[in-house]
Image: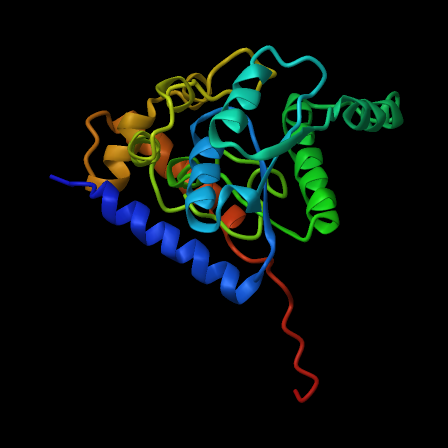
Length: 247
């Protein structure tokens, strides 16, 4: 049975963050989008432990009114990090307005545009604050492609990218993050459904399959395998045509 050593994972991740910044951003700040859920909370906490809370800057990016925005504010206060709020609604609405009458905007477009604008916002702030943008995706989400390419899938470094949902939760508890942030059900904020509702299976099932290769329902296994294969491109570098002028 797979046994997760949370202390080893946390110590190793903290050391890795320090080493990464030493090579790729010495003296730089961490710029991180704060949703108030487990992934951004744990990522921020790990960066605080590695670099100090004064080097971590949170960005809250509601799309208009966000019913759970207080979660984001509370975790910033809990961690003691500086933060700011940037409402992305005008930017999102501006794109829709420009497309109005010229394109039949799909539901997937409406779901993916806000995270892409959020990532553009993070990079704008990062360039003005001598920063490096933290990716907050976990292994479980990445495994089935539950992220937006060039949205939350982007970033300069990914502290929790190789941890499953269950492991991220254990790390959060180990770091002393209040349970309300760790257990907050993730959702896209648009459909009214949780991530698990939309995926059609629980993260606990997915995590067990990833770490132990064990899954009971063959239909769920087939769905996970299909999503994994279909979304691998999101994690790969941009494919390019290799032109050889000598040939």
